[in-house]
Image (tube, rainbow, N blue to C red; front, top):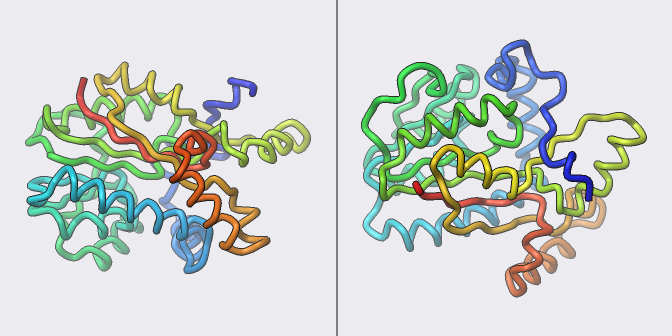
Length: 255
């Protein structure tokens, strides 16, 4: 597979890049009512990931989490899952529109509209930090800035959990490559190998990772969930198949 597909920028980003991706009401509405609508492929993947995260947190934090940060928390999807386990849950984002939804969804969390990738990285560190649907979409410089900021905010024995929802080794890459070459559509990818290099540069290392979505969205939307569910069961039984999943959840620690 062409390794140049591993790291492509998001198309048609605003002047300030991904930081302004959800400054528009239409983008926020699309994310909430289309991407994560009930019965969608992404909502199904999220249910799978939620089960994995619940089991992981039961194992890593059996007595609960003291301080928890959800970076680029958006509308609070991940925050709403983990906040009940934390004594001090915090969400940060640069989109006031997304935060307005998050405040309704997770009223117990402290929500802050600010960009922690800029300025001082000082502050009390967290036991757990999550960052979902961010690193694939962010431009390369922002990825590096974010990892440096998060490194300063994770305790020495803390955990960073992220997801990469554009694995170039997945079935999604086949159709996407055709669109890129024939239709000239820019396509986003971020491989585990490329992200491992970013983590290493920022002072992190991977502790474990799991793949979700062996079957792509087109199969799910065309044939329904039965075949994708069977494929997920197969991937759980034979972990090597997870390397071909669309969405990877990566658990990291400080090196």
